[in-house]
Structure formats: structure tokens, C-alpha cells
Length: 77
Image 1 (cartoon, rainbow, N blue to C red):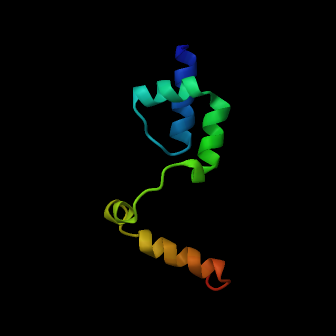
Image 2 (image 1 turned 135 degrees about the vertical axis):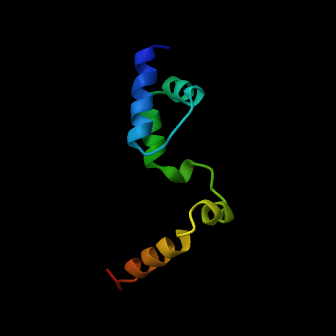
């Protein structure tokens, strides 16, 4: 696997807002750039995160969910 592919994958993951280990970069590089981009753009294919973990590490999770619900109902900002 080319070092350039790993560097490209590391750049993609940083730009997408995710940190990753060297092993994860190597696995993603082996998966292929286009495949990883599709995976990032279609999160429904990812394993769900339990809500209690979201709240533990992001206490404003419920506030963000309330804003999203308000906006989708046509009220609010």
C-alpha cells in the first residue's frame, strides 16, 4: 500500500472532521477513496451510536435535537 494513499486518506478523514489511528488510515486506504467517501456521505450504513453516549460526550445533544425539530416543523430560525 502506497504511503501516498495513506496520506490521502488521512487528509480526507481530517477534512471530514474525524480523527483516526494509523491502522484505521491503512484500512480505509485499502478500502479505496471512492468507497470511503460514499461511506461518509451515507451514514445510515454506519453502526448506530447509543443515545446515552451522545449525551455523555455532547451534553448539548438534546438542545441540538430540539432546534432541528423546531426548524423541520417550520418554526424558529
